[in-house]
Length: 125
Image (cartoon, one colour):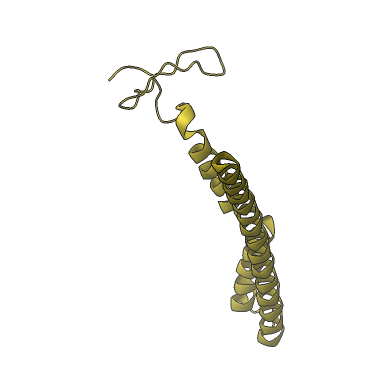
């Protein structure tokens, strides 16, 4: 097992350990580039939406205000219902985005399959 052959963006050699059968560590192995791209995309999507953070902060403040008697329970209940409605709307938006992404991936796969089938038909002639 040797060291990774990759040169980092700053010009230094990577200090990672090369994977078995490769000259590169998993972080630089060209064969794993697509896997790294998918993982990075998934990580980016996992970041919390600023609207959700804002809602959580508002609910935290509302909770404290109710306990301290600064906000009436009825008003807090209505505010909580509005917050829940906003959360449901955000969830629907997230699901639509995910579905659009999946449909895009499916379209790509179908196009690849059609292309492979076309090439197979041509090569049989």
